[in-house]
Length: 202
Length: 202
DNA sequence: GGATAGCCATACGATACCGTATGGATAGCC
DNA sequence: GGCTATCCATACGGTATCGTATGGCTATCC
Image (cartoon, rainbow over all chains, first blue to last red; front, top):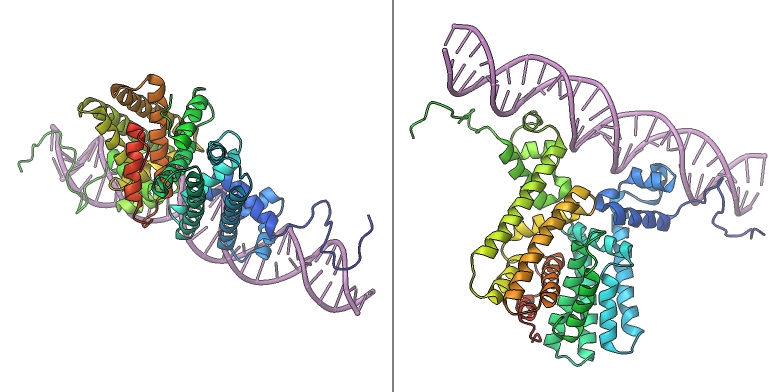
């Protein structure tokens, strides 16, 4: 427990470590997942963080600055995901495609999907968010397209399949709520196979 | 232009006809399409209608009552659409399916899609809305499933195709913003054919 | 051990919204 | 002409939120 006496930023201010920008952005992203854009209110977030908005306005100029940061963090994360997935796993393209579908098709990753939907809803009214979503979509579509091409499809075919892949994935997360009858699991598997391989489902 | 003197509800109150519940619900639905659930605020709607909230609280008990009405109106309309489409147009099933996809895939009907997305976002936080959406989905899925069966598919196959159809349609409306490069039209056509007929796209 | 910088609490004004209370205007009915 | 029901405006209290202003606490540095 030796305290290095030099440039140590801080450590304890009576039971709660001081917040930084990252902590605020993290909390804001959580709120976005749970309540959508309307959940990103300064005083509400402050309460979640156990501080008052005095803290917030020390770290941020205003609410908009936080929104911008949340958006950019999301964008960077998504783009990182795409390149990570494109690099590693250089096994069989079709398996990768099925895995991509699985990641986006609910199940685990509930939080990621909630954020995804919240951001897309946000994008319907905010041009800045719309631009970010469009960029992310471009990256993902390109990556998926390459995968399909890698499995032997023509560029044309690959393009339409990747659009189908993502539209289907996001759409499915709009249709499923908690329960939903069990068969959906089987249906999803069939559809994934359908999209990836083109076999007639059934 | 004879005025029947009996049970005539009203006609002119100085340039503006009196509002009724339906007019309020209509205005609310417009606001929902444009701004989402957060657009449904009493005083804002009142301004849109050119009145004050004094009027609103004469027609409705509170805000929640309006929300319920908007939701129910939407549900009834969607279910009517489904049965209308199921009855008429009894021509070729596959053509009907392609037409269904077209209706949901943006282009015209921007307003309908905006409302659709707003309601689904609403449903992510309100159980009442979630229930309505689920009911509508059931109707649509069943109707589409029958169409696929009518074109010679097995029930299993028809089930997964109809899920694919709607998930894809809603997902596409989450991905497209104003511009988006032109080829999407061609891609959509290919995908529609893919879903309806199972041909490899391209 | 006093000054300074980092981090936060509190208090304030301003706005937006909900719901209520109450009065006023208008149209039909007698 | 007055009565009544319909429909709406205005005023009010209450809450939530934004952003600002200002002061206080704690560590670190000299």
